[in-house]
Length: 244
Image (cartoon, rainbow, N blue to C red; front, side, top):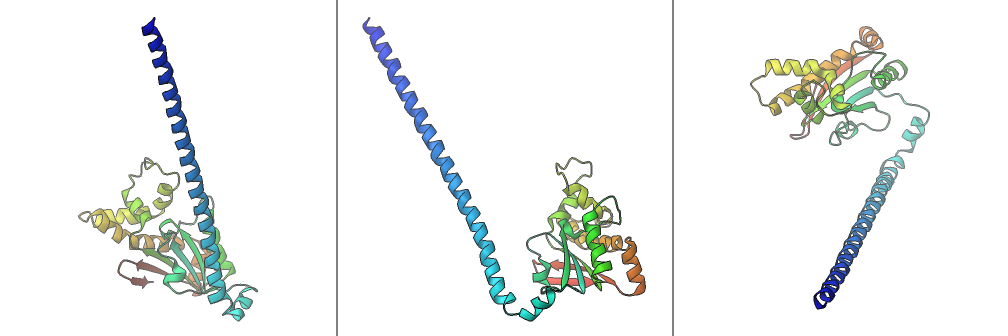
């Protein structure tokens, strides 16, 4: 009987301890969850505040100092340049080339690529090019590649068999597959990093050729009202190259 009594006491104590451990764990998880929620809330507020402070600076240092410019821009735009640049956060063309408001109509995408004319695909790029050439009457289209481009590295690395695990990227960068093929054939002895550096400029050349497949671009080129240029921004060494 004595053994049974102590046994039940032992079971009771163990159950109490187990319950205490569970409650402690539950409280710790709750505290951790609340902490994560607070961090997310702070980050969200900080993100919004960054936008507000950025606009405040723009308004004070640019907008309010150039009232005539913005009054003119309120009636329309007539940029001389259309720029096709990469979406990479390190290579904003307005910053790199010192374009002011109203100076450059801009497309930014992965690896600064221009797809060939195709009314069934890539309508976003096609619509922007059409609007720039036919409606804004831009005089220059500039396609700008850049150093350390992740899109170009993806192009050079993907096997091309759909196994990359991406929903959109592999299909998009395949626009410049001719550049990859040329670099792989001409510079087979180079490392992947060196091949990527070559492809950054070669992909620009492919995009320039693709521009010529748009009927309205071709017509403007023939009339002499439009010129197309290639560019490459090496932000590692602070170098910008441009070519026709």
